[in-house]
Length: 200
Image (cartoon, rainbow, N blue to C red):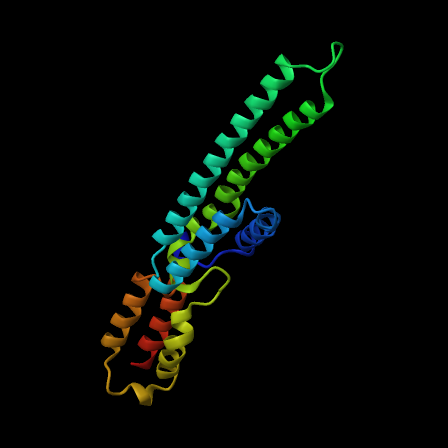
């Protein structure tokens, strides 16, 4: 299952591109609130191991962006109304009013594009690997559980004398539980199972 596997380099690249694109928005102030939501959501996910914190953070960011889009539409309507109904020159439009319309239109386009980037470059790659991300993080390719306790278990499998107090069935049960919980991949489970069974 894809959600139990680490993010591909392509997915990690999408997230990195999203972060790079977020920096100018943070610099101009508009991206500060979504950045706070996302950082807090990732922090809470790492702390609890629950991916729903990231989903909530993304949903809160989307609400903020929808409000920005609504604000841009209001600005665009107001500036367009002023441009069309109160032209300063008889044979053309006031250039300042025209610039305001272009500014509101550009702001609207940027917010819509940012909303698409949030979904496609940030949330979708994480959602596709939610079990892995919630237990191991975004930029890790090796399971933390394997790094913390799997090496010891693997040593026990390789050095059978340490494992004499445990039965092979007990160890197989433990490895099966690790696989079911999404902490190890099917390949890692198969490798450990083969080593355990080869001892008998």
